Length: 324
Image (cartoon, rainbow, N blue to C red):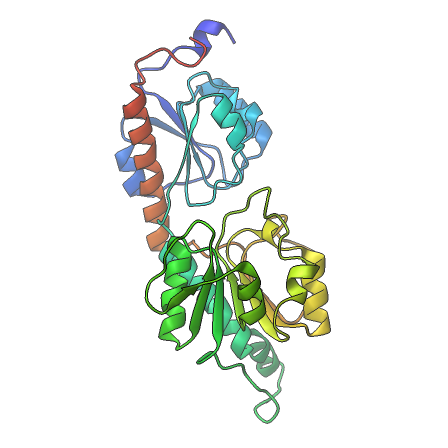
C-alpha cells in the first residue's frame, strides 16, 4: 500500500466494528460513516486485513484483542472505543504511544452486570443450579438441603465503580452489611463502609469482584488471599477472569474452604469443551454475559458511538492523519 493511500481520509470515513452487529440506535448516530463489521469473533489476522484495506478512523471493540500491530495498519486511526467498560483487551501503552484515544462506555451496562452479580450470589447461596439438576434427576432433597441466608451477613465488594455501587444497593436491599475496598474511592454512601482489602477478605460472607484487571492485581485472589477468607464464604466474579488464580480457587472449592463460586469471566475465553471447571460441582458458570441484556446492548453501542464522535470532533479529523 502506498503512503498516499495510507494517509488519505475517505469522503465517508470508515469505522470497523469487531463484531457482527451494532444496535440500530448506535448505527443511526454513525450515519456519516461506513461501518464495517469484522464478524462474530474476529482474530488479529482478520482485523489486520480489514484495517489495512479500509483504513478506519475508529474501532468499536466488542470481542477482540486490539494489539499494536492492528493499530499500525491504519494511519488514520484516531480512537478505539470499547463497547462496554473493560479496556484490558486493548494495548493501552501502544495506543498512547501512537496518540490513539481509548474510550470506554463506562456505566452503560452497570445495571445489567450488577443484577447478574447478585443473581450469581443468590444462586450460590441457595444452591439453585444443583437443586435444579437433582430434581430433574428424580431426587427430592428437602429433608437434607440447607441454603445460606443472606440477611444479616456481610457482603464485601472489591471495586466501587458504577457496578459495585449498584451491587451495594442490592445487598442493602437484602439486609446485608456492605463493606467495600477501593483505593480510588474516598467516601461511600450511608450503609456502606470503606475498609482495607484485608478486612473485606477476612470479614465477608460473600466477596464480589468489581475492579478492572491491571498488571498489579492479576491473580490477586490467590491461595494466600483465599486463606484469609471466612470458611464457607462465597466468591463471585463478574469483572475479569485474570483476577483469580484458577488453581487456588478450584482447590478451595474442592476442600470446602469456599462454599461456592459464581463466575462470569475466565482467564481464557471462550470456556468450551473439557475446561477445568466442568467437574467442579459448587461453581456456577455463565459465559461472560453479565452485561448482555437488550437494554445494555443499546446503551453500550450508543456510548461507544458517542465516544467516537466526541474524540473525532475534538481532534478535527480534517487535519493530516498520524504520520502525515
